[in-house]
Length: 274
Length: 127
Length: 166
Image (tube, rainbow over all chains, first blue to last red):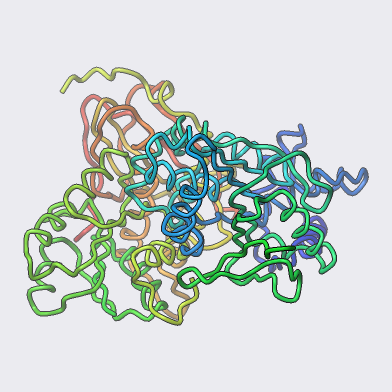
């Protein structure tokens, strides 16, 4: 094992500080397994060398990669169900009726992570609409360049495709690439990716008909949450739809939204006159 | 809710069974498709079968065919839980009548997600 | 079936793919946070192997090899048992066999064409075939010697293992 006790301790404290996740004693082998490739990539002989080099010359990008390597779990497809069944059942038909036939619907996956959410939407659209690629554009953004690149690549591991993706969709929309699965080129083309920091003024995006802003507001304090919701609303169509995470709400944060019950979940729409 | 775990590996039966029991299922086991059919015929008709593919005597695919051929078992949800993961294999299983497909190795979270998709996650279990 | 392999495994599979498969198999079967680490340690005096055969355009075996005590510990993890529960030979054959099964199945799906997976076996590893028809990962689990070897079938196959009892 290339990891020393002091190095493990440093990593443990870093991960706890950055992610609140606790690495118990006994997880040394996990740290070794996850960080050894990164150490070797940098031409270092072991994990403790990697730790020493970061302690000597702090580098936020490397620190972030270390934390990500130890805390990344697979995210689900169709996470929580309702925001997607509601999309095809209610939101999409209403939007298609409200828009001209030549208008492309604009959808934004605003914290796309490794891309499951954006491709879930793409698959649903492809199954629901003929020539979906000509009728809809999906924008997928994330703070992390690594995540944006993952979304762009559209490749997923066996463990990742196991997470809530219906098997029938797996066989129809993916092909195997080695031990991984790759989304079909047609669906990959429906998605435009870019880096975007929600906590800063937004780049030129939208206007969007549907925004998925799920499980990301929790990382921000109240004033920032408010700023983000305001910025998002400003680049949405007045009759657009906002989906938040299952346990999230605009209540107590931003009055400029109307909550609409959809199935067992809800969506938010810009309040008229806001 | 009841589940039948069908796998020639005792270790895998235990792993799957434990996950399902944690979700509140009553779980029975069978080591191959033939023994699994016996369990059904004895009167234990599960809501869910978790089925391995490669087993002696009667494999998982044959079991799926047999169950789907019998209208008495129409309400039984069939999910493959197997290391067979080529597209062709998955298509074959779905065409035979399997409702879902979980690839080994899987995590408890993956099982939970599949059950949620199938509407088979008991109330009170957080998705 | 032609005795001549179309291509050696080295042309079909690289160690990085096998490692990424192991990276998924270990946490799932052996336990959260567990890992097969590709850093070699000294081999033990005695080893035991579990394997599955692959039969198709490429034919051979996926073999897991470790010391008997490691096999015991792996089994305890897979079965989630702790002392004073004792795992017996049947448990070890079953658990190790299932590890080989899951590794083998995933490796099989990377190979071209349609192949069949045999049922797990345990004992002394099958004889290797051509020297270049091997993809071996030498490493450790929790500091214990462990290898994952994808090896082509030997021309005259003598099975020295026992099928896992059903």
